Amino acid sequence: MRVFVTGASGHIGSALIPELVENGHEVVGLARSDRSAAVLEAAGAEVHRGDLDDLDGLREAAGAADGVVHLAFKHEAMQSGDYLSAIADDLKAIEAMGAGLEGSGKPFVGTGGTLMLALSGIKDRPGTEADVVTGGPRVDAELAVIGFAERGIRSSLIRLSPIVHSSLDHHGFAHTLIGIARDKGVSGYVGDGANRWPAVHTLDVARLYRLALESAPAGSRLHGVADEGVPFRDIAGVIGRRLSLPVVSVDPGDAGEHFGFLGGFVGLDNWTSSARTRKLLGWEPAHEGLIDDLSHGHYFDNVAA
Image 1: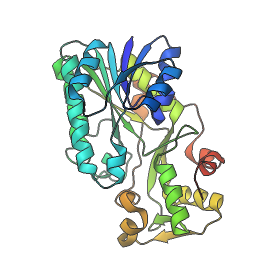
Image 2: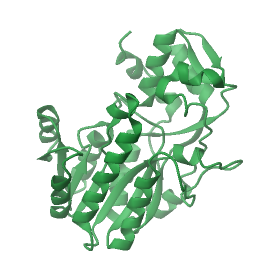
Image 3: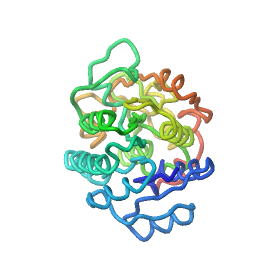
Image 4: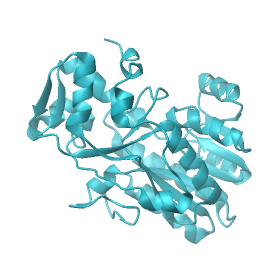
């Protein structure tokens, strides 16, 4: 299969390209810079120059491929506070690629997040793939991808855990939390820190994207979740120990000031199951969990003091 991948030189893309190539697929990666293009070529992928604003180019690249995996997102805009603009641009890119695939029966694998489930009011049970959110950040993009199934596209949507971790991760939420702890001189959690975040290893989730591309039924919601729910105070505890900093509770009212753009999310309870995904695709995470991975030095060696 000839696969067009956006975000191909990023964190998950850097694991997905070898996963696809080793399993007999050809990869065409979207690159917006010379550096990204060089990375893709070194990994054995062809290069399609452009970005998420090049809607005609995205439409053409999707139409010329046998399938699409959409990983890219304007993370810089999100982190600078322009989250709504990043969300709107992502939806435009998705619609453009969908137009290129319409009526073809080819696969499109999109990307969402499990944190949306925490905003939906689910209580006393883990969120599942069957849960549908009707409003919230990035929900319109998820609904658009699922809706592709009615337009002759074998679409699926992977809701990623908020922390996708490994030595390949250089800019994710784990690094953000470590950076905040360094800046504040404490490693914090909100309230009693009993709220849970799911997590998954990069290599495990790369395999999930491949399996979804190859065989997920049209309109599938899938969960990229290995650890169903790690107490946030345990995450803060590992960070504090590694940095030799106090581990402290942050008042919910001060979360925005302490955690910045993550302030609205760090206190959410995001207990999430991936049981249906595992059964549907035969996917079983095989790599270490979040706490063990954070206990290694690579997350801290890569963060400037």
